[in-house]
Amino acid sequence: MPRRARCPFCNRLFDRARLDAHVQRCRTKQRVIDQPRTVRRTVVVDGNNVAYYLSPDGRPHAKNLVLALKSLISAHLRPIVVVSAALKHNVPDPSYLGELSRLTTVIEAPAGRDDDFFVIQLAQQHNADIVSNDRFLDWLDSYPWIASRLRRYRMTPSGLILI
Image (cartoon, rainbow, N blue to C red; front, side, top):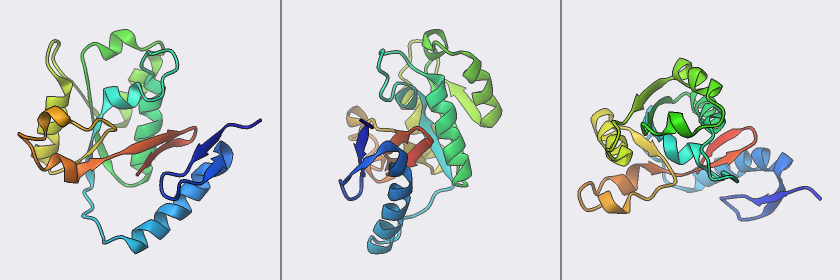
């Protein structure tokens, strides 16, 4: 039996093979209905959040980051990735990390420092959106603009879909 997933826009169930095409159509309909959103060309990607997304073994996967970056680049966005210093030691497939730095700018947060802070600072400096499923609750009081610039995502076998 094929695995099924829900469309984030209409909440209908689809086979994973058909989900991507449906989400693209559903997203287009949703944008026509919604008010136009300010489009920022640069996005800051919370690399750890993407790497750990739906990890069955609890380890980060650099392949998620590569798929996400290819999707963002094909959507004509300029991604900047922020990762923690520990990520390179925890990934089981380090060959993807080389490809990651070839695709875009990768910034490693210093050891012992909070990488969320660097994500927020870069987004503020570049007037960019943040691609993450983290809600940054600890930072909302200091940076109230986060809620309006946070772009949630969903990973599919073919790449990342911004919600």
